[in-house]
Length: 117
Image 1 (spheres, one colour):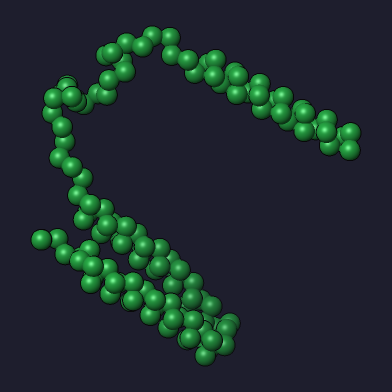
Image 2 (tube, helix red, strand yellow):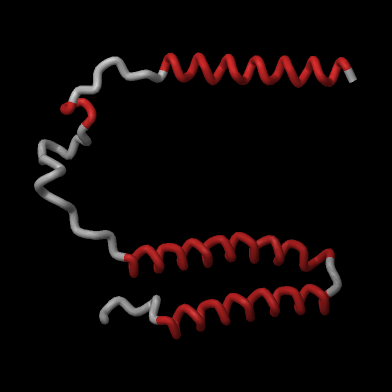
């Protein structure tokens, strides 16, 4: 019990020491307006704002990412086909693809795939 308590105390002391050192090192010496402002290729970021990011593009990108990951999940299923029982494998793959198609249908019905509105 004494060994556990001393280990916990040692870990806490090392952690607190590292936190203290990082806090001291990370202090900025000069808070200059020019150094703290973002650099935008010579443009003043307060006067010229960018156009807002399209949420439609973001949703389409997330949808692409989801289906890209699904392809990575589907590819090993082909390799496993030789070593598994065919009916169980077919049922698993069919359910997986049906769930994907239901998700795609849901996105299509919500209008995520349409650009012009």
